[in-house]
Length: 256
Image 1 (spheres, one colour):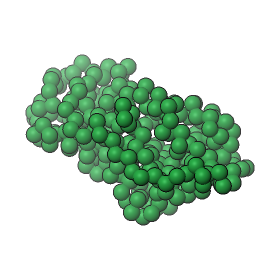
Image 2 (image 1 turned 60 degrees about the vertical axis):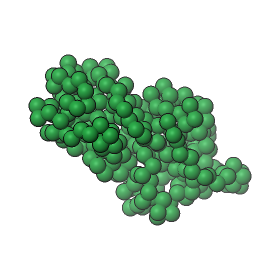
Image 3 (image 1 turned 45 degrees about the vertical axis):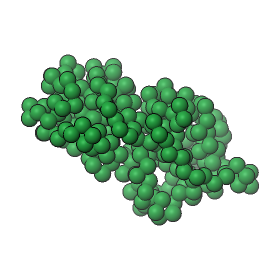
């Protein structure tokens, strides 16, 4: 898998000059890291389990306040003036409008994710291959084209020459997964990590030929770059502890 890493400014030296933010109120999230400044993290819905694990594991001198949603929603919130220190989206393209507005100080790819075909419990649609989604008797669910999981689904379908029939379009990968897990759809296209997380709900999945698995960039905002705690978390995301959490959730790690 090919991961893109964008040129990053050196943050270590500048972080040493930053004053530590003090006197913050308790975070809305459930992080259990070392008490200290709040770090506001916007993250894609497909990272829900990862962020929960990071809330427990991170002890770098700050507490995580998390906002989970579709990458498109997170981008819209930032463009509307919402404050965030670190943003992690489900593909590179989702950050384009935020970059263009000059809100990003640095970014790095921290994980990758493949698209798979997830099947409802018991496989009532008798789906055996991706091509079966073109059948009028199969109800499928995929993400809307405007969000990363929708772009990933389109990429996989186009590569296989499959045209969907009777599909519903959802605003997040978790919405697709819920429709399939509850039997509202026979099958759907989701990230492999989401399929793995739903194994206890009777959901199974088939691996697909994903020509270009999604890359997940973590971005340090201009606002976040002014706070030592935020810089520390951003740098921690590229380290071994964060990589272990991503890997245990089924994500791919850059360079591995």
